[in-house]
Length: 256
Image 1 (cartoon, helix red, strand yellow):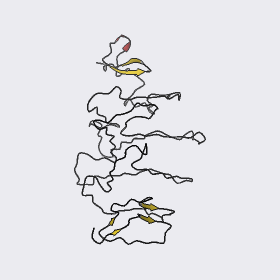
Image 2: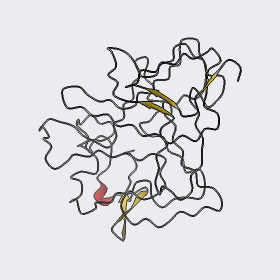
Image 3: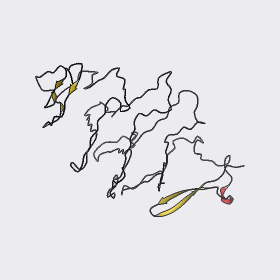
Image 4: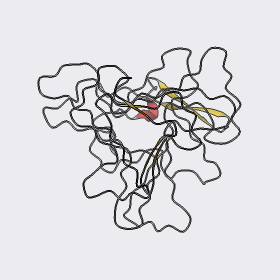
């Protein structure tokens, strides 16, 4: 690479008196085999409203976006992260995790936009081993909310493994194909839509918890919508499994 600087031992920024100036042609690490991290940031306290790495006005020109990293591992180490980030707070500062904010600006057109895309792909010839603990498996997304034993949980606090919010500030889209979760069984068929493993925790108090009786999508009354079901044949069912026993939730047609 013309006019670029080669760093065979990597680039160390932090508690160092070395300063490197990068040329317009960029930074090339080549085929180096460093003994430590190729890029190491140590002991840095960032000034207010600054980022460790920041790009402004950079338009991607390939589908892999701003950053593209590929590689292959074999047996060592047994488990690896593609990206590991750990940020602690020991005060009033709130850690908000990774923020991904794509925008479809005025005048844009497109049928899809994702703030995050997670695909776990098992290739032909690969073998998925038996699960030996809760959480083992192949998942497109793995989420956990962990409250430690000695933490304090306010009576009005809220916690969940995931929070979803749908906002439509314009006209109502209730009649369109809109939902909180959109799922597809693309091929092969699956056993369950939802699976709950109590793991000796005592289980959940409710299967679903609706804070208001608005008649959407549930109601505490049946007079205006359903016949007296004591003498009415059901009009379908939802199949569930509790332990090893199969049961059915009966469905009923609206009152004629």
